[in-house]
Length: 266
Image (cartoon, rainbow, N blue to C red; front, side, top):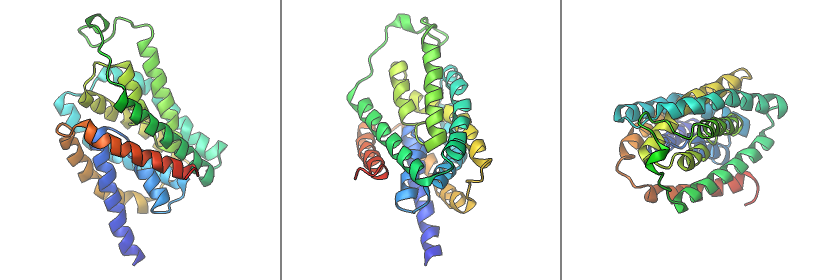
């Protein structure tokens, strides 16, 4: 009975997480990690490591659709990766050396990060894009205020990378909101496509860090991925048709509640 339950529940969770990734650009961590900890009773340190590997396998399927649609800003991706790749590896080191893989401490940190992600999601819903003037963006897609924007983008990558390495949360939630504020002229699909693309090297770096410490469980990864791949393909196709106002408020509530539960507030 337990084997049957696992055979059904893990792929079902994968489908749900994959659709969220494809629809919103948010990493599966905002949904997959709390579900694994709260519902499937996976230890938090193991859930984080395996969610990262699952995301690494699944995200390219959604990214291909966005590349074909021309909704990826490669200049922004390059800036983000400069900060995120080393920071994500550092996050994995923090979990396994500084925190010694302590599941309860990591569970608390995931809860806090999820709560921040929910707050960022609410802010994105409530605060509309502020249109830039035409002088702010030049024809090659770079900005004329080259002094602060590239540096700020690298910093966003570093902050997001560190959080992802520690908690698996942040690449498609906190970082997406910060990108919205830094690049308000990007469309919703460009934000999602750019974020999905930059998340691949970010997550790969974090996975390498966690692999060094043996946190990966293929018994978790394989069934979830079997569900997540079709989920992300369907979500990516639906993302151009579904309005943000339909999905994001519901996700914000679910993510916020999960964060508070993991942090022990509720």
